[in-house]
Length: 408
Figure 1 (cartoon, rainbow, N blue to C red):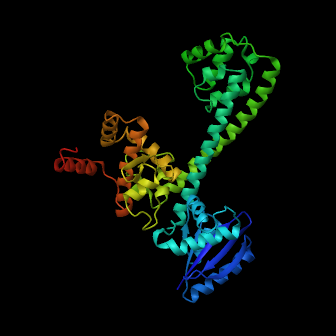
Figure 2: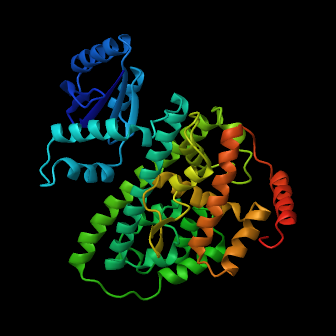
């Protein structure tokens, strides 16, 4: 016997509707995110499992507290794409009206009708889940730092362009120290050479480097009104403080990710790849691939999730090929940068990239094509639990070229 659960989650509660195989409602509950409410709901779930009822649950988010709760209680969880849910609503209520109970109804009935066409969530081990969360949070912090840098750059363009001309990267220690010591155009007026040389040597710059920087600093500047300088220099100092905090946070995440990844069972296979021996790209990439058995049906499934292959619309004689926006964005980010780094470390990767460019593809198209190749290799590594061998892969390419000389 199977029962199908539809769950619509909000910040404070989760609306639950349960249907039997015939579509009749057998249970409904508004589960609050409290220990008592979850305990009562868990007792109900355990009771049904003990009676031999197979419980399947559909909800929008593939992660979160309620997903962990359901998996811990032996429920099969089916994440439903929000776009698919939005389209399914029209099957039951074309007027567009919506509420939590209706969403739970749509989720439950959609699962009851289409569960054979959906894939149940395959949870990773706790260690891999933690690594995935660490790398995702690290990526968000990095994106937040980029936004702060963009705001800082725009602020300098409004009142003080000299730091942008002298320092290619505002995140360096010398740039941060300079901004605290010389926050306004007036602060570098009449800057003496000896004063600047002492400052530059403190940050391990040679005399030649210091002289080139000093020449730019003492050059004439476009005058800016005093009230603009006062306002923008205040904002600049706050942004610099924010940037310093984020730099420290990223260093902390880098250390924790390296420690976590180096002790993970994934590390032996993952670090056999020819690039990214350090840094966060490889941990991020392999955490997205995960260690759940049966998660990936084929290498094409992994390529589609990574957004490296397009999709095709066909209708009669009409056919169009589209960029794949619906994918795992973190996986796409990780494999993109992994492929770029591989150009310096892998012979076949560089040759394949050059071939794509020669065929007329743009840079990002060539990188996506290379990323698809790498994901095919990584799928075999994940499936067979075997490390990567550059020599073996080159031998496979040579063997393929002998068998298929036209397509080589």
